[in-house]
Image 1: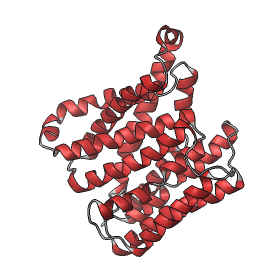
Image 2: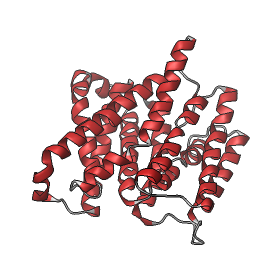
Image 3: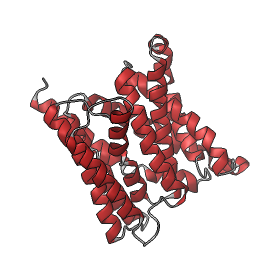
Length: 300
């Protein structure tokens, strides 16, 4: 049992991490402006994170050889999911990208029920209904067919699904410590971004030379702070809090992302989109509520 001070620090870290990731779109788009279009900026960020974490992989190589291949693949898949999420900010509106990603409770519940055979509390069934309804409202705000619009929104939706698959595998098989998992996570993200990048935009080539040091600096700062430091801090904090509290505190990302995009990029949500987004967030709260009551582990 942790003391009140530890709980308070852990709570602040989780809330701060969620809020901090609400600004992640800024360096992603800044790298685009510097000459790394499409997924190439995400390649730079994730590769930088992999380089920063490589000493961990070297020192702890035995832990990887002794780990389940399913666990390693699951962690790498989580990195791939985050890579898609990262690229989505280049092609879509920030708030919509974040909200589409936050549909993970729906996919986690469905995977847990129909793939893993885990019990499904009634409130999680309600969470699925509310989340899907919110998705429909949000995507049909302009009277259009309720489907993702553009490659960015499709990537965010797929990212949430892949993240749910990943966390299910991690929960079932992984024994890696957080810092060890972070390397596999960043490596998986780098591979996914590298595979994706040529299909979205051509490699910019020599045009990068003019701003090369600025690009490298921004990529390494972003990779080290967002992908290494904040994730490691989050891993420390989550084991000290109830899963329900963690899930709700991380929703700060939605609010900060939406507000920062409105103020800094002039991206505003319509009233109908706000209603749909609120329903998606309600689905997330409903998904963790039974966990808080029963004490079972969260699946995403």
